[in-house]
Length: 80
Image (cartoon, rainbow, N blue to C red; front, side, top):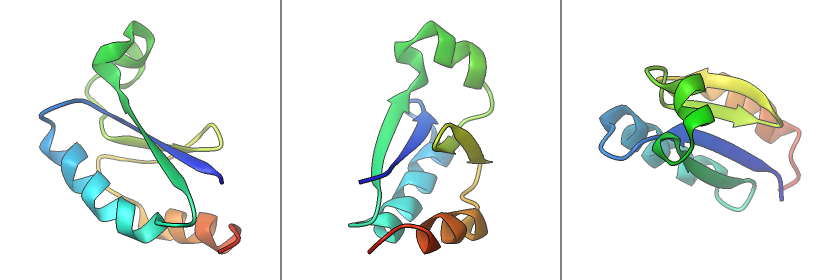
């Protein structure tokens, strides 16, 4: 199963909202890996104030808020 990565940190309200919105939309179609940027210096350097950031296949598809049209394009190319 293909995977989305969500770069976030604990206590981030925007991160919690994005993940809450994202999970039901991709359930059974994509896995979601939540990456805590506080766990790695390189993630902290890359995403510090831009979280949440969602990546698919190495490409950033959105930050701060879920881009539903980008997600729809990905899901349309993902088997159910």
